[in-house]
Length: 626
Ligand code: ADP
Ligand code: MG
Image 1 (cartoon, rainbow, N blue to C red):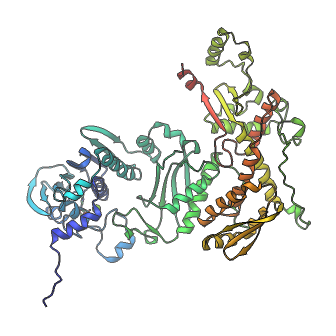
Image 2: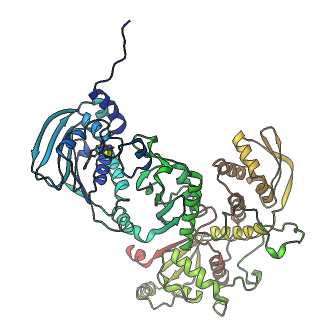
Image 3: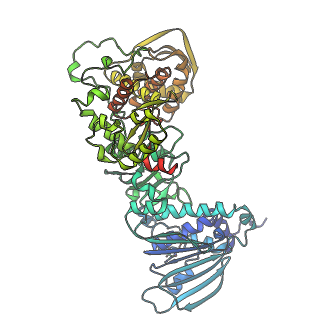
């Protein structure tokens, strides 16, 4: 029998490679823009027709190519970027495989015009489906100009697989965003069907983000930076109130290369934990710099997945840097959920016999009765104006800042803030309207209860609306957490143990955290893989135990739950349950007391489960209604 193995002809091999590199027009955009960046361009223009089906043209002012290179660049594995295998481990360029242009040329009509600065004449090369059609000297600008026409002209299956122009163009925008963000020092222009979509001038990262995603991003960005031996981290995260229902603006870059990484993504989400409801996603633009030897960009042909040698350490660095960034902007709770050490007792308690845990939810507890308050800790709005103004100038102004108000409230007293006799002009107007409609009581408008769910109060800037059950949930939670940090929680024994079958991984994770779980008040036995819960935190309602355990397991399985977070999960459940029946008393003292007490909490804009407690309606928004 004769030999049957043959080498594939070039054009077939290129077409196969093209299948991996060029999935859609957006892939071409990505590859070509990256080449322009690698060529040192400071200005890159893109002209697209019909979402790239008809034309993708890219013009750069980079270093251009020699006549021979202009032909060579379409050969497979033709690259100027690596010469030796070792170069692979110290990559500074975006491309290195020498595959992109060969792939594109295999499935489109390509015209290249390019000229180096030193050359008088440039070169024009035309290629159709790997066939060289024409090469000639040409007068052209310095730099490189690629025109890619009729993508997939010879691969009907691919062509038919393309989605609508809208979808394909959206992919192009995605690629465009991923490349213009790290290269904010390069000017970019994107034109689609003769319409200019972006015109980006060089500038700092913050400006680039705002230019791409809109003006209102400007005051939503919180800087994040961290410098360690393993990684340098830089960039921005969006404030919690800018979070979205969809994973929109989430960008990770390593050495200025966009990549996707569920694990690091989780690190950011973990930093936002307790600040966002689980259904909302924070925006972020984070740039990692690592030694190229520490990463492997080779795992994926289009290189959006990257392997990190130190991924665990980088996870922690990202999480703590983001948290720190948020904390600096007074957004995160200061409770230290991150402590990896044991829960250490305060020094003053060393040597003492641990006391029986004392945390209880007192159903009759009303934080808004002045006599219930611990002296000096908080007071009602009224009495606070007479002296201890410590928390007001921190808590309240921070809340106002968080709620989007300016810092002009730094020194305002609560009485002033709730005073409707403001000289603010818009308010005067507002009042005269109200007087006209004869609502006498409106004049003395203080904070009031709305719909049994909200407390509404006016400040010169507009209205603040509080979801008071959530506010109460936050207060309960803080109280529980304060207690928990000092003492283990009390446990109540169940007459009939609750049973739950766990997977092997869940069981391992549970055992790994057994100390914390028992400190919270859980007692249990194992029957094989069945968890038999015989004791539960005393303050936890039996009916909520299993859902709480589910939540804990869910997070344990991700393998990154620390002690503080388990405590948080359980305590927030308890606080939630404890707040359900809460009703605020309908009188000014109680309501003002509620507000003061809420602002005493470090974190008063979000409930422990990340739901919003305070919202603002600005005067502008009010006026827009009319
Ligand atoms: P890679 O980028 O992996 O090297 P490509 O197929 O994308 O492979 O490009 C092949 C070569 O063509 C590059 O290494 C570079 O030398 C050259 N090249 C491509 N685009 C440009 C450009 N816009 N300006 C100058 N040279 C370019
Ligand atoms: Mg390339």
